[in-house]
Length: 79
Image (tube, rainbow, N blue to C red):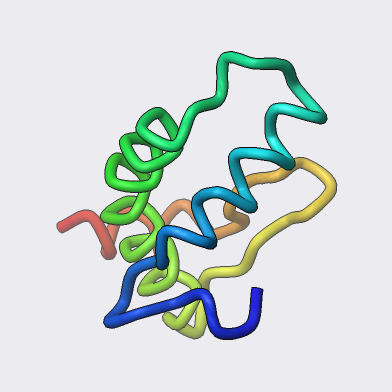
C-alpha cells in the first residue's frame, strides 16, 4: 500500500483497495464507510497497545493472541 497514506490517515485509493479485498474475502457487507468507522474505533486502542509493547516488561503472545505480563507489572501499569 505504498503511497496510500496521507497525514496519518489513508487516501481514498487505499480505502477502495481495502474495500475490494474485504468484499472478496468476507462478502459485500464491507463498505468504505464501515471500514473507516472500524479504523476510527480501533486506532486509540492500537495506540495504547503500542505504548504497552514499548514498555520493557510487556510482550505479545502470538499463539494465544494476547499480552503476556506478570500480574504485578500489570497492577503497577494500571495504577
